[in-house]
Length: 397
Image (cartoon, rainbow, N blue to C red; front, side):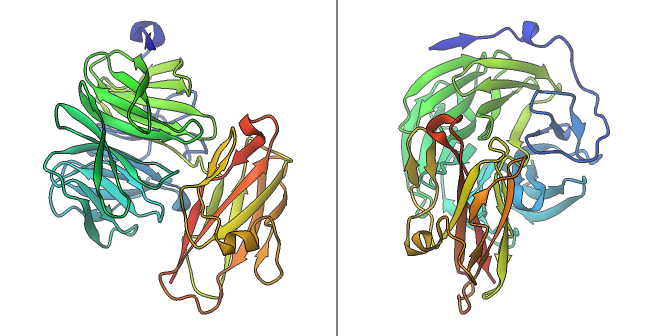
């Protein structure tokens, strides 16, 4: 199926001016361009500058747990930008530049680079390793949260979408494209990829995880450049080379478009769209706090669980999957408040969908151990009757 829109009809005014604001809020879009790093409301309101620092930004990944954005420039520097606008260089690629990035299941950065393929970097930026050496530039990357593997866009032939094994880096070609895949994201509720293509009319492809295109949405302009997905609202946000961002539902219907810049929207993500948050590190024997925020499910029953590993996910018909392994720790803790081990693992969300819980890291857990946490709220008004949580990880120091 093919959909076309008219940019002139969709965008009556250019919103180039940046305005002052305290900080981004949950659900805002965050986007990088040659002109800087900005955020705007999910309804495509006026853009706001993160910082007065002007850099040639080329990627954007929101690091949810510590209220910051990870981004990069054309020199290979990796930056962390806080909600307050403070910007710090945290790493320098040994060669090349980062064209796109995502986080793996352990919250480490995995980057598509312009010279040597996919690079995994420890979440602090302290070390780098090559996940997949590749003879062509990689321009787009996203993690499939169901499998843990990565979908990447390469510049070969003129373009391919490939699957990279999360552990070995083994590459499998999913499909060939008529142009360069410049952005890619995973839509977990429908198990599809959205792929932005750098070619005439800026096509956005809705594609199965095996590479079959189900729908093409022509956004017009000089070509597609980036795309992201809000899992809570189930909406896509696609950026173009011409500086426009389009808001699209998960069926492919364009709901709005705004011209934000004369420069390409090189990277785009959602600020704080997670519903499970926790501290990323802890010591054996300590207690980890869990913040629950099912904003779509106020005053609804919820439960949490932890596990030692993360797998292909626990399928929940109509709703998607819980990205956690059903191991013995999962069955021990799921929906249970256990004295000395868990609190708040079952209950009812408050009037805004919030709740809190805790779990204890077992005494004697060796340094480097990982515990994964997720949750679910019961909500008959949502597909499948459930509001599914993301999965977060805590490392034992």
